[in-house]
Length: 126
Image (cartoon, rainbow, N blue to C red; front, side, top):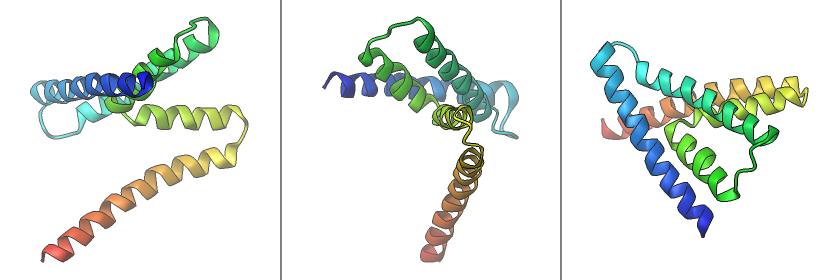
């Protein structure tokens, strides 16, 4: 139960932070490019690398705190951070073909799935 509460609280905080970054990016830079999304993807990837490396080296965080930070906060702030971690994990295992398939498949198939869903809805609505 503690894990679920930790994920929920971290997720709420991460989502609010993501929303804040998006609002700030639009106010500062305008609507012409998804600067907010780009920022949270880069920041989230950096933060998950920092947290995972610290936990692996010396920081003995509790399971509940790990769930709060990694799954909850960073998962809601940006799912790209988890994607980045998974890709690096495969790479460090020297699973280069799987890394390429995972990266290409995740990006291309996810975009294709989004486009397919939009086409279905637009077709049904027409």
